[in-house]
Image 1 (cartoon, helix red, strand yellow):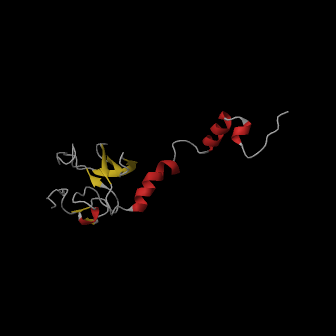
Image 2 (cartoon, rainbow, N blue to C red):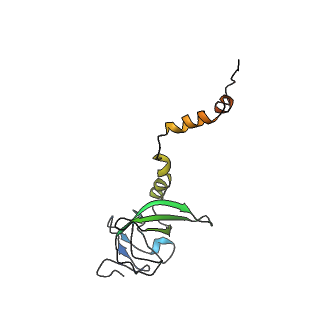
Image 3 (cartoon, rainbow, N blue to C red):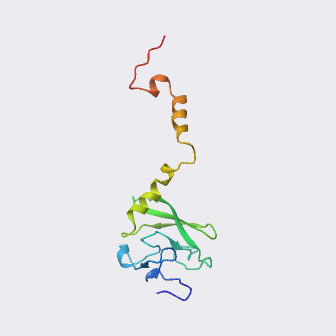
Length: 139
């Protein structure tokens, strides 16, 4: 159920604050839905999982994914207003292309120049190790 301040309980449907999609719990594979399957955004509603005690109500942006011990993927969200981080398991109907793009983002945009990788590799290896397919003759 949606309340007057656009909050919903985890068992009801809601309208996504980011993309406007109608989000229903049925496709999640569970009766607990806490983020939009289309844009993966959420709303900062909890201080502790399920308590609905947060007064922030900021948009929780999906910024990463991680794999739990049991192999299940989870989305890392960061609140745009207060910066709080939270982790939520993915749902069966989550956008797979968006999940993958978030997962590979650190590889696509590393915090250092990619050319530095080759330079560091070449500097740390002996000539034979840097190019094992080539025979290097030493004089």
